[in-house]
Image 1 (tube, rainbow, N blue to C red):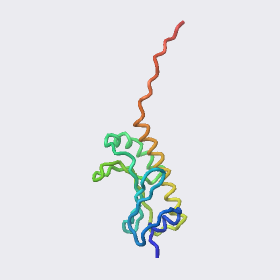
Image 2 (cartoon, helix red, strand yellow):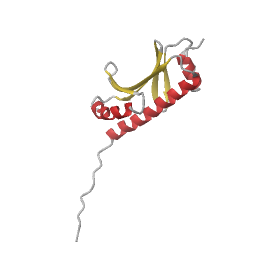
Image 3 (cartoon, rainbow, N blue to C red):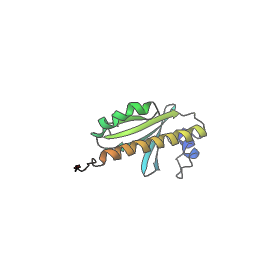
Image 4 (cartoon, helix red, strand yellow):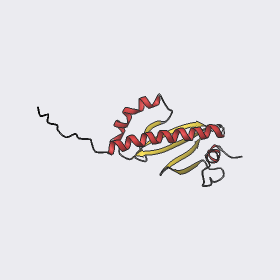
Length: 133
C-alpha cells in the first residue's frame, strides 16, 4: 500500500519514481527543490527561499499577514543555514487534497521567492526634478 509521499507524487503526476516505502524525497519543481517528508501522521513540504540570514527580519515583516491567508510557515533552518518555507497536511489526505495542498504550497513559494527577489533588487532612485516657472 503506497504511503502519503507516494500518493502525493502520483496525485501531481510527478515524473520521477518514488522508491517504495520512502519517507523523504526531493521533488525538482519550477527550478527549485521541494523536500517532502513523512513525519509521523503528517506530510511536510519545505523549500529554501534564501541563504541570507539578513533577509529573515525583512521577510518576517510579511509573515504575520501571510499567516492569515495561508498555512505556509516561514522559518530559519539553523542547521542548513537557510530561510525556508514549510507546510504540512495529514498523511491520510485524499489525492484531491494532496494536489490542492501541493498547488497551494507552490503558489506560496512563488510569492515568497518574488519578495526575496525584491530584496535583492537595487533600490529605485528617482532623478531630482527641477520645476522651472
